[in-house]
Amino acid sequence: MHYDARVEPPIRRWISYVARLVEPKERFACFSKDFWTRVPKQYVSAVHLLADKFEYGENVNPYLSTSLLYNNFAKKKGGRTDLLWADWKIHHFHLTTTISKDEKGFTQRSDYLLFAYVGDDYVCFLDVKYHKSENVFSNPIFVKQLVESWAELAEVHAINGIHVENCWSAEEIKKLRKGGLTPLTSVKGRAYMMGLGVSTAGTAGDDVFLYDSLVDEIKYLSQDILIFLNRRNALLNPMTFSLKLKNDGLSLENSIDESFGKASLCHLEQVNRFFNQPWLLKKN
Image (cartoon, rainbow, N blue to C red; front, side, top):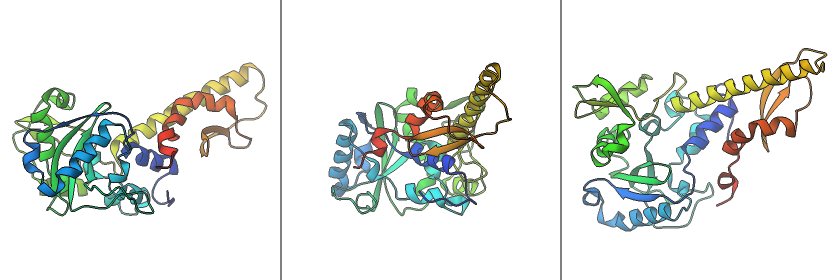
């Protein structure tokens, strides 16, 4: 990962990177209505291959966009996240039967892409579209396909009490995103909000929320430590705490002292598991 002080803190960029990855685990593959009628014949085998990889719990991240790497140091707001994923939590995968990978770990790029909604133990194959189709990444058809094929699943993303008569076009959604706005998606008059959209910094809103929650938890932890030290009369000088990302995980440190070491890291065990997941660190 590259770091540019003008973009965002390394920890926040790392969260943005990890959040877009797909954890290798067994997932049941299901297909939207009339899915196979929209798949070009030359890509049928590639779709089956990707479905098998999902169902057997294999690593599918090499099929993701290479922007996964470049978004982490983009200087322009429009390039700091996958807008399709930020708005709708929909991934897009390249379709290929070639198993070889390039030097960066990605498979061969393809002209057609698979658009899918990835859940904890399932994956919904929504559509296959030509990569260079106009406004393909802002096409609301994907949300419509999710709603019409899996109504109960989409219900958790519905916003009750709001009726939307006009549907935004793909071109309008693209322009709204460029302006930093997150439009609601309408399907048969109901409003849906799959993700938190894009922040003013050009990053995914969900990632910002996770980062802020993490910072709040660290503040609470530092306060607990200060209370403990005060009670033990061990606090001789005022302490200023900082959060650092090390090779073995997150560490809460006194800015003018050494790391608390294992004692502090155990408090951050769940967070460290997020940053250093075995499947993520393992070379594929």
